[in-house]
Length: 69
Image (cartoon, rainbow, N blue to C red; front, side, top):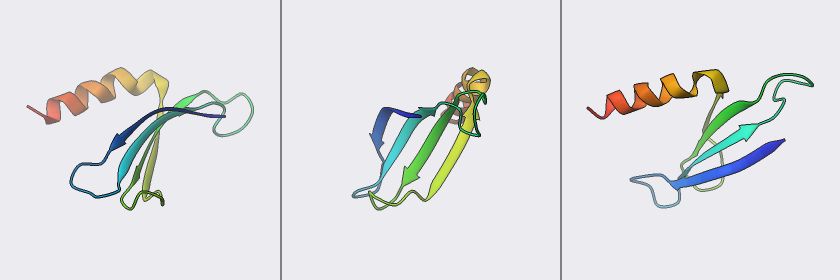
């Protein structure tokens, strides 16, 4: 099951967005929930998607925050 949590307008695009969701059992019954980040440039088609284990979220966020420094 996919659980929409946040849609963010994609900077420097007219219709693009970033979608942040969780997906329960993404690889079959009993597999752990992942965070899914998808990007659409045109507002409808997903061009990029990544699945991140929930256990890696804090370290990923810290790494992204370091990019802004």
